Length: 310
Image (cartoon, rainbow, N blue to C red):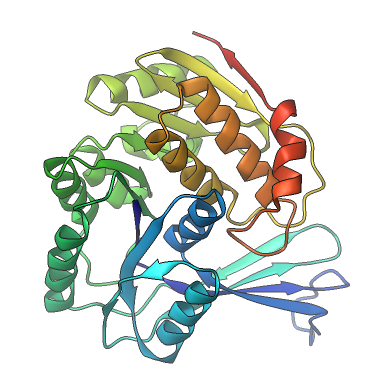
C-alpha cells in the first residue's frame, strides 16, 4: 500500500481552445475535462493504474471537495480525507491551438490550526500497513511551512519511505527531515541552496550535497530533457523519446507515482528511472491529468534511455 498526501486538493479543469488566447476577448471552449486535482491526487491515480494499492489523504471541503472525492472513487482510488470548513479550490489549464499552455491556480482557502492538528493525527493513524508515502504540492493558507518535515519524521518513525515533491519553504523545511526521495527542478534546487545553479556539474554537486545530508535519492527534473538522479549508486541521466504531446500537466506527478511503485516493488535505480520516465511520457500523450494508456506506456518504455554519468 502507498499513501499519498495532497494538502491543496483541487478540481482541475482542462480547457481546449481551437484558437490562440486573445486577452480581453470572449473565448469559447472547444472541450473541457474535469479531474480530481492537486499533485498528490495525480500521483494517486497513476499508482492505481500501475497496479499498486493506494490510499489518498489530505484536506477537502465543501461542494468541490465532495466532487473531488466522487471523481476519485470513480477511478477506484480509496480516500480518507480530513474535511475542513473551507471550500476546495479549482484550477484551470488552458490549452490553446498555438500549442501554449496557460494555468490559473487558486491558492486554496485557509485551514485552521485545529484542522491541521486533526490531519497530523489522522496521518499517523494511516501509516501502519503502508510501505511508502508520497507528499506532493503546496499547502493551503494556515498550514505551517514545516508540515512536510513533521510528516517525514512520522513516516520514518513508522518505517515508511517518504517521497517529497514540493517547493519553496515547504521543500527547504521538509529536506531538514531527510526524506527518502525528493524531486526538485533546476529552479527549486537554486532556491533550496540560496544560489544560482545552472550547469549540469553544479546540479550534480548540489544533489550530492543533499544526498550527504541523508536524502537517499535526489531526482532533478529537467523538463523535456529528462531528469538527473543522484544517489549512493551514482549519477544517472534519463531521457524519454519524442512523443506527441497533448498535455504536460501531471507529468512530474506521474513520475513520482511510478517511482513510488518501483520503490515498493524493489526495482533497481536504472529500472526505476526507466519505468518512471516512460509513465511520465505516456501521461503527456493524454488530455486528462494523472492518466496514461497502457499501450502508450508499452510503446515508450523500450525507447527510454538511462545512462550512468557519474
